[in-house]
Image 1 (cartoon, rainbow, N blue to C red):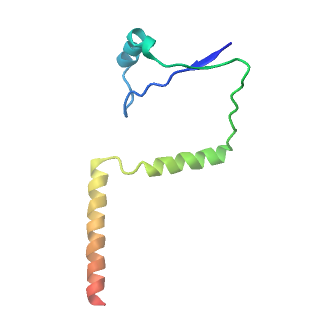
Image 2 (tube, helix red, strand yellow):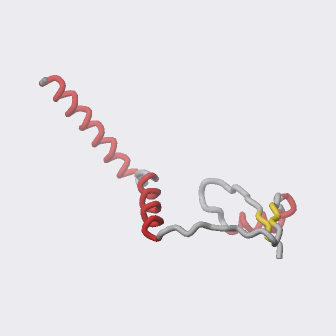
Image 3 (tube, rainbow, N blue to C red):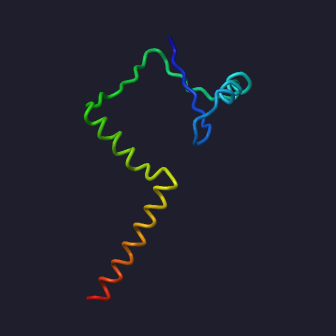
Length: 92
């Protein structure tokens, strides 16, 4: 059994099923496949479940603020913080 892989970048959002079907039906011949002979074996390192959970939480935190309301509240908080720092500096 041979193993082959092709990678296609479709954009930043999740693709619609119609786009996937169009790619497979019409543009399949344009894919560049990487063939892996059957003699080689792909080794994946097992990750501790707790470590995987930590990595997932870290990735979720790094995505940032998602809604307009949260963005507005964050801006308001930053402005208040600047005002407090300026007042504190003048008092000193």
